[in-house]
Amino acid sequence: MQINKITHSSLFQIMSTDISQQLRSKWFWTYSLLFGGFVAVMFATGITESQIIGFVGLSRLMVTFMQVSMVILPIYVLITTVRSVVGDRESNVMEYMLSFPVSFTGYFWGKFLAKFLLTYIPVFIALLGAALWGSFTNLDVPWDLFTLYSALLAAMIFCFLGISMFISSVAQSQDLAISSAFVLWLLLVAFLDLILMGLLLKMRIDAGTVIGLGMINPLQVFRTTVLVLFDPELTVMGAASYFVLDTVSRELFIFFAIAYPITLGLLFGWLGNYFFKTKDII
Image (cartoon, rainbow, N blue to C red):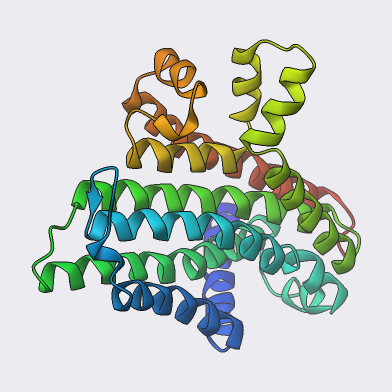
């Protein structure tokens, strides 16, 4: 009982300390202004007045916002988070923090949750701001699409945070952690549908197996779900759409797209916490 009390206390202590530190960072405000400015630019350029496959107004803006988020958010989370644990160890900050009554688990998950909030909230506020401004200017606000997109963004950030914290826990140096994160990002991008399908079909592998392997990639899952919400028939994916939509319903696929990245993030987060507690961290 006493151990659980210390863990919860240290979790909130580390989380509040990390949030306070990050709020003083120029990187955080640059990141926040990037998404807010991007939404403002899209409004200014009249993207809400364009139409594609029936999507117009805020729906069109949200689709573009999600495509840009898929490019920026994963690499931002990876590069900024992989230094969390290993960076504190190299700078001796961890040794100082753990001299207080702070548990290993509280320390790890405190930093995890702080980073999640600081990454997700600016993106959510930018998307919410677009919806509120659209409502103020008499545009139709697709609140159901807003809710699903918000959940997808949270799931993707959570997934890459878990992976980043795992890398940070097992890496021996900051340089190795950043290099590993960058290589992982390149592999995930390289194995998006076109390259993966071209490679595996050349090896005469069954198309269902190819698509199934592609769905292991959280980036592919995120991209496909954005397309499903954008185009329910998945016409932009060609023949692959028949396999995806014939295998599972649209609703089930959307549920999978939210649950799978969260599960992956929790798994890697648990593994990261395990290695953090069991290895010689000082």
